[in-house]
Image (cartoon, rainbow, N blue to C red; front, side):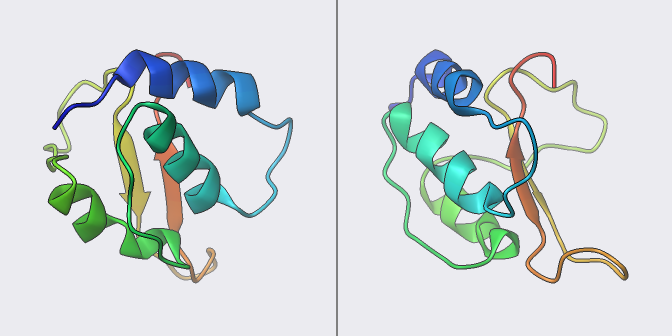
Length: 93
């Protein structure tokens, strides 16, 4: 996998919005692509896990200390968004 995490994080920080626009998968995918990896598209954030694995990402243990560029896919839960959530850690948030 040839991916520049710093380019992805820089893109993420410079394009972050002040509040949710309910397009987490789109914005996270765009940041990943700014780092040099083109991802398949899917409508729901919850469905990006296998796409990221195929692109060369790997699943981390829950106890792993996050590094800038790490991506999380959160599955739907009762009371939450049925599309789940996708996010990238920028080193502080």
